[in-house]
Image 1 (cartoon, rainbow over the protein chains, first blue to last red):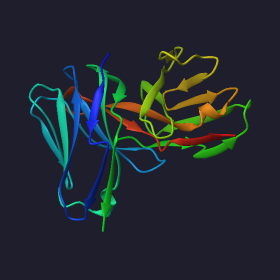
Image 2: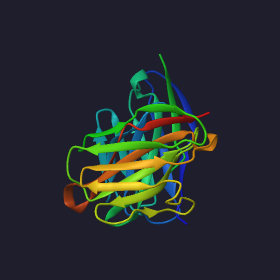
Image 3: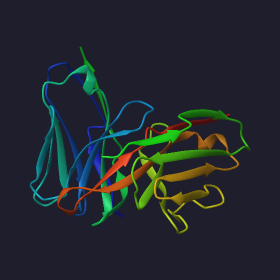
Image 4: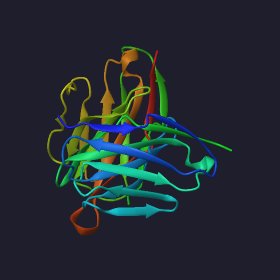
Length: 112
Length: 117
């Protein structure tokens, strides 16, 4: 079955530092979603990558999908306390959207 | 994007009772999904709900325990029946929206935090 592995599981960084979160699949992905979740709340859609080599940015967050479409990285530049939360990657089972499987999440803490 | 609301936002329920969670979307969507997030875990899909047909359940989830309604293209309900403490989770609904270039973007509601005592 398809699985997504996220690394690291948790991360503590000093405010202003850059950081990277990775999401890896053993199979070629139809696409890759990145979400942010604040504790006990819903998921905030950050971006969706579909094409190999694609890169998107949202404010200080940049995500890239590798050419083989098996790994994605999420990079935060100059982190702020507002970036704290759980980052989840999700991938669709099918080429036309539909149900997602998720990685286990990366918990980010940003120390002021 | 889509604006999705859920009711209730949280509840504390006694074991053996049932709770119905509502999900409302601000636009018409074909596919709606219900996920469960157990404490400290990632999201697991419960079922897919399409308007006009019965929900499709994932392995490990059954209709008797999690009946779903989908009366129209903007609304769905999930009932958690005969609850036990193991049902304590965040329940989230989501929808697929067509994005740019044939892609699909999935948006989530704010979640319903359920605690069963």
